[in-house]
Length: 166
Image (cartoon, rainbow, N blue to C red):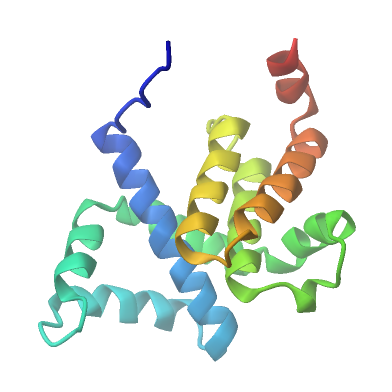
């Protein structure tokens, strides 16, 4: 018998939407060099922009997103970028600069959550990274993200990973 996937709770949907926005914000920050505060302000301003091409979808995502989590992720990943990058770099098969920018944003977000948001199970962090990569990344980018976050979880949360594998 195959199991059907559980439907996400409203709280899970809210956190997922916050992560989606955070990845998009981190991508914009990486690509434009704008301050993270400016990026967040632009995102929040787009809620009211009726002329935005994808206004309805944008309004829906912003409407359900946990905006406090969005703010935390966006600002803290940016603030801790150097340490996060040093954590990720040894696990990569290429230079950090050679990574796809969206995959880099997803890896930074996942690394931050694995390192600092210990209340979030490591499997949830990895799964969210995979789903974000499927939604925004290159065709097989989710496989790469999965591999890196799995290795990172083994390093940062070895006890949790070991307990899960027993």
